[in-house]
Length: 182
Image (cartoon, rainbow, N blue to C red):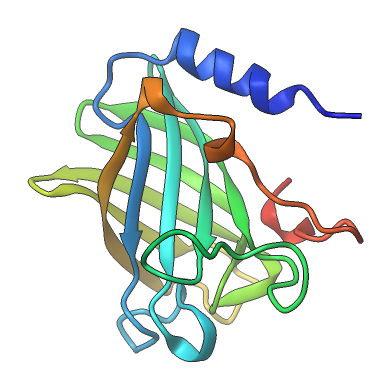
């Protein structure tokens, strides 16, 4: 049986999304693993491509972050091995005000915490070339607590162009992606 939630979510995004400037699909690539980027990286420390699909609902922000293996955004991570449980993470408690937004992520991160959920504080700031996404670990039980990284995101689609595929977060046959916040 097909679940109707992606279609319902897409309809809500299309119907309720404000004309705010942050709604839509944004893409960027992290730096390779380094002291400046201890959190968000691909296999063997390589750069990781990141996609953020967000909708603005007045002052509220909702969406998800998806992780890709390559800069073409074709080869996505999934809930099956070898990625196991780190294909995407849901945004929580999102708020937006003019050119700044804040939210939390409670999920895995490829590289920094691929198989266990981690709480992160996230901010988005408008810059000349798109958005700057900054992530900081806010999880006292993690050795990464206080570590941060940032990357620049460029607009890929407007809010009214978000599709059900943009909102999909894969779940593996064994219930994988449990560390994603789903």
